[in-house]
Length: 337
Image (cartoon, one colour):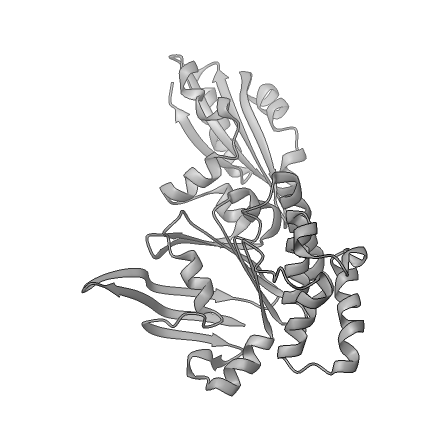
């Protein structure tokens, strides 16, 4: 649905050029809940603003439904933006307008039939579960309620694509979970393609099926969320995921003992429920200590990790590791004994 091809964005200030984005290539399918994650300054907000041409790239192509949006004239761009909703970190509501007025404004500027505006507003407020706040003003709403209004406004003109620029960064953890759940529910109901910008890996974990990791203007890792979580390839991705792993797992190196291997097992999906440890003990006559463990429930599946200390004959330890690999488990030897 969306192909980003060789997109580059260079800013020039006082004769100094800064490459915010360096030859970005991404392929986003219809119905994806696509996450783009990176630290501050990685270029993720610049990228999402290019997708509705709030900014213009220095070079490259952005193909949406087989059309390069960078070639659009003003009329074509206006039509495209009607079908591309956007929600922001700080809501961007008009304080002088009620909830009804804020959502209605998006319909008014799009020349929505006047006689249908009120019913459409009520329909949208039911969708975001905020019907009772129709006459309230932004100052009377909580952060979560403001974001629900912003989501309703973004959905006003029946978009096919929804862009989310750090939409939960200003919210507390409980409200964040509620907003993310709302976005997932809306995506399913409306068959939306959602592109979500964040610096929080737990947001990716809880919502997305695919993710791209940005670092200093480059895409350094991209793929299915389950594959990224189970086998992160780059240091920055490993650091993002490490924040979701219990502290004792990170510090497992303190328990190293000669003659005892320490291994990390990565589980995916139904494998989590299999009695792996009991099999190892019986089959290879090993003593096994569980040093740490965690499970991340993703949108499409679950990824679990176990840190085990193996004690027994070294040959049996090696055989047990081979057996685990043969059973398609991810294995990393953290300490070789």
